[in-house]
Each structure stands twice: as C-alpha cells, then as structure tokens.
Image (tube, helix red, strand yellow):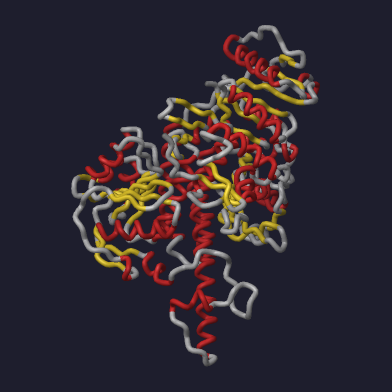
Length: 640
C-alpha cells in the first residue's frame, strides 16, 4: 500500500481526493494546507507519492515543498494546478503535472504514471489529456547522512527535560517562574539559542511575549505579534497546528516581524499552548539565527512541554479563583455574617455576573478536600502517610484478581500498595473518561494483558513489586511489541534510576511523592503522542481502531474498514472525550481547525459517510450517536 501526501488548501477537493485514493488501495498519510504542515507530515510519514497544489494557503507554494523534500529520492511528485504553465516553464523538482479541473480517473492514472517513473525512469502511455511530464530540474540532492544515533540521544535528552520540567511546573505556584522555566528547558531540549512563550490577549487580539530565554538585554523587553498568519507564531495560533520554518529567508509570505528581525531569526518551530475554554492560551516556540532541520520529533518535544504548561496555567487559574473565593467569604464573615462551612462554599459563592464577588469560570466544582488528597507523601518506595478525605480509605485486602473500575479509556495500574492503588482509582473515577484496571503483581499484570481482546491506552507501573522489577518488566513488554505509553512510578529519584527506567522503554518516570495533577498531565501528554502512532489500538464497540493507520478492524467478521483522514480524526477526538457528548461546534473546531469554510453541513456529511461504514444499520445507529446537539460514541455497544 503506497503512502500519499496531499498538499491542497481547498479541503473539499482534498477530501474528495482522499476518498478516491483510499477506495483504490492507497493510504493517505495526511492533508496539509501550508508548506510547514506538509513538511511536518512528510518527515514523519516518509510518503511514496505527493500530490501538491501549486497555490496553497497563506500564499505558500507547493514547489517549495518539493524543493525541501529533494533528499527523498524515491518520492514521486505530482502537481495539480489550474495554471500548468507556471510549473512546466519553470525548473522545479517534480515528475508530472495534472491540470485542474480533473476527473478522478485522471488522478489515479497520473499517480500510476508517476509511480512508474520512480520505478523505471520512464512514463508509458496512455496519458490523460490534461497530464504533462515535467522536464528534469537537475539531479536531486543526495540523501542526508544517517543521524539515527544522534536522534536517539536527543530524544532521550528531551524525555529527561520534560520529566524534570513536569516536576517543577506542577509543584510551583509562581506562574511567571514556570513560564520562564518552560522557555529555558525548550532551549535546552532543542539546543536552540532563543525560546519564547507568547500569551494571547483577547481584548487586544494579539500575542504578547510573556517569557523568553536567550535574548540580549533590550531585545526581549517588548514583543507583540499579530494573532494572524503574518508570522510563524501567529500562524501556529490561528491554525492550531505546529509550524516549522527551517529557513525564513526563503518564505515568500513571511513578514519577519521586527522582533524576529532584531534577533536575526532564520528558523523557528512553534506549537500552541492549549487553554481551558477551547481558545489557546498562547504559543510556545524555539528560534535560531541559522538554518535548521526541525522535524516532527522536535514538534513532539515542544508539544509535551506545552501540554504540561497548559496544566500548570489551569492549576494557577484554579488556585487564584479559590483564593478570591476564600477572601470573599472571609469578607462576608467579617461583615457580620456567619462563615459558611465547606459544604456550602460552592452553593453560596456568587455566580458570574451576580453581586460583587469573584467571577469563577465554568468548570467542575472542586471538592476542597480533593486538593489535600492530591499530594501523596512517601518514605522510600512505599507510602507511609496520606492526606486524603476519610471516604478514600479502604480496608487492606490481599492481592487477588485485577479490579476494573470506570468506563472510558483503559489504563492499567500495576502497584502493590493497596491504599495507593485505591486512591488512584478514586482519582481516575473523579476525573472521568478512564476505565482503570489494577494489578498488584507482575503475574496479575501478565494475566490481564493475556486476556483476549484486552488493550490498554497506558500503563502506570511501579518499579518495586513483590515478584519482580518494574524496569525489567517494562523491557519485557517492549520486547513483546506492546507499544502503549508506560509511566514508571517509584520512590527512587536518582539520575541513574531515571536513566535506567527510560532505557527500559518507559515513556516517562515519576518519583513519589507525586501530585495528582502532575501525573494526570503527564498521562494526557503521553496519550496524545500515542494516538497518532502506528502502535495505537483503541477498542470502539465491536472494532479495534488503529488511528495511525486510519483503520477499523472487525475481527468477528474478519474485515477491515479503511477510513479517510477526517473520519479517523473524528473517531479519535470522540474517543478521547470518552462517553460524554461533544458539541458540534467543538468537534468541527478540533477536527478541522481554524477554517471558516467548514460548515455544519460539512460535519453532518462526514458523519453520514462514517455511519455508512461502521453502523450495522445506519438509519438506527448504536455506535455513533447524536445526542443533545452533539455527538458521542457508545463504547459499550455489543453486537452479535
């Protein structure tokens, strides 16, 4: 199955092409609207064929993509454009050009010819009437040397940096210090001289530099960018997608803002920092004054830091709101009213827009005692004391069969401390969207993993267990091709212990005592990375969903259902949201991103097509449901 990359700014044309290609046995590894998006997808998936529109979003040119990918000598490039002369008269990298508008049969035949040109160096008729073979543009650049060893070392360094930043950020209530540390660790992880954190100001509609690292005195003092596509940072903000610019000097649409010019910025990579209300908090990025080769691995690293930063910002906002509520209650008590007890705080606190009290954002009510439960203190590798609500304590019981709790994304906890295990189960139940399975020994974990059709999105693994070492068990799981994220939990926090855990194949390493918010943030970050990988397997009703391959497997009927990129994205987001209802606008925004051309009709059309593929009776769906103005997955559906 050949992998195809599509670079097309018209999403309707791109979706149509994707449908046709998937139906005829191709695998569409991604659709991009800009040069940066296309390059990020190409370096991640290494496609066999690329379909490039010449005129892309934001003034980008498809010919730039071909030039950047010149090192992929086995990549077949087909341009699709209404202005064929702009390609045929220029010395561009590529094999052929197909004029718009084109028939689907012409597109398929053109790809066959380009594939033949790659394999044999010749193009055999018949040719579509609007098809043109391009003259050679000179020898392609030689492939880049193999840097796998250096890349492995860089990934290991970046994992260590993320682990250290997580511990710092989620234990620190000084937000400016956390933002500054985020910029510093990004510079350390990417070996970049300049890093920055921009905050979005909704009243001004711009991006303000909130923290930075590496600039000379006077340069970093003022930095305000437009929250639009005129800069790489603004483009990341409005598209909600990572932006890689390895050489701004060759960007035909880049304004190179005064702040970037003052720094002499040549290369930059930027990702968004997610917010609580759907609007991004801002942008996190790294810059360099020389041409770079930033890739998807660098994007993943920045995204990991940004996800932890988003949790830290949210925690800071909750703390500030709680402080203001307490101050208001104290003021009420000092004014003569009796101070209410904790059970009445949420009920008697003023609502937004009412009275002179604080204006809390819409959110799930916090139990004041839950904050006390969040910090778990230990001595050595075993827990000796807890600060938790009385209802959290349960009687000790011997290790027995694994216990399952909750509905949603399956997570396996392998921990021999019964009290800690039960506390984690309660926290996951309160968080929602997780189905927790627990095991007290490695033998129990083996039994759970050996169960037929049992899959886990993540494993929380203690190091010191009664019947073996967690690091050795992690290495065993990786040898058996278990690809889900594994987070090690242990009381040992020496550098050698961290390196040993990561070397065994763990994705992250969390030392006790740990904070619940920190564990949850790291778990979410690892799950986001995992969702797009080839190893990801999620049970959805009667199917096994492999989002990295855009595939549903129905083992009971021995069939496979190929999905388009958008269909896979819809299922992935609904699955991530668990059993809850997702509003139509939220779903469209998350899946299609910043695109004014997406309408309710577009979403409903994709839902209709998806139901035709996955429902036993599309007129009476039991898996993909419409509910309360939105959509949800019925993960518990069972079919004969």
